[in-house]
Amino acid sequence: MAAALPVDATLAVETDGSFPGLLSAYAAAYRHGALPASVGRLDEPAPGALFGQTLPVASDAALAGRVERGLERVKPGLVGRLHRAFLSERPGMEVTVLRLVDAAQAGGAVAAEDWTFEPARVVAQWSGRVGREAHRMEAFVRFERHTDDESGAERWAAVARPEYHVLPLLTEHFAARYPTMAWRIVDARRRLALVHTPEPDRQPGEPATVIVPADTLDLPEAAPDEAAAQAMWRAYFQAVTIPERRNLRLHLRHVPKRYWPYLTEKQTGDQA
Image 1: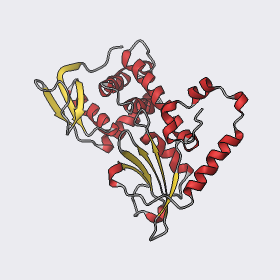
Image 2: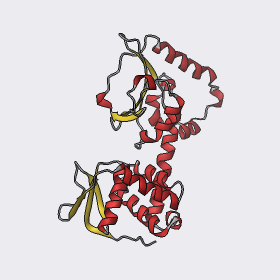
Image 3: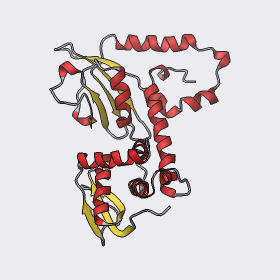
Image 4: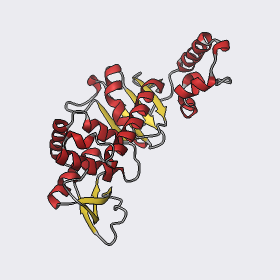
């Protein structure tokens, strides 16, 4: 599948590392007349750009929105697929996404579904992996209750270590599920946190849910009864377990061991 724009082996673009920044880079590349061979961050120059041309691109939300709307007209759901693949953080994925964006703009929906075209195939593969990881996180996040000694304010916190950068994909699910609670989900691998502030506690116009560096957050001690609540949760799981029907292989398929350190019910001597 031929794309409208050639890839310029001497061109590198630098963005802020966000998905809107990458879509803004596509618009800049379109004006430039060629796709870049590499994509880096504005604070970390793109690899391979030493002897070529580097094109810095500022993230433009309005421009990125126009690119998104154009892609959705071509193929509904394509933007979500591209976004999930982007969040895989796989080396070179930014260029792959740009190539598929360009091919879809030039060739329509057929290009997005042409598995003989490598970018379409790679984006679909990694989009599926990231989507499955986000789905698991919706099930495996375990919140712990904290209270502020002075104000008595209640906050809920969870720690996870997802394989991919899925925090942006968790926003809608958890904000809809716990809209009136103050909560945060910390990605221990990337040191980022998804933070939700209920309406009475945030400023007018401030978004309810944002992603911030985890190091900027403070958290009171766990509530006095939190340990007892977790003990009851573990007791429940033990009570409903039928030892004779245990199938560890099947269990590991659904709940891989890499999730266990952050699951309350797994913090016991018997982890099978």
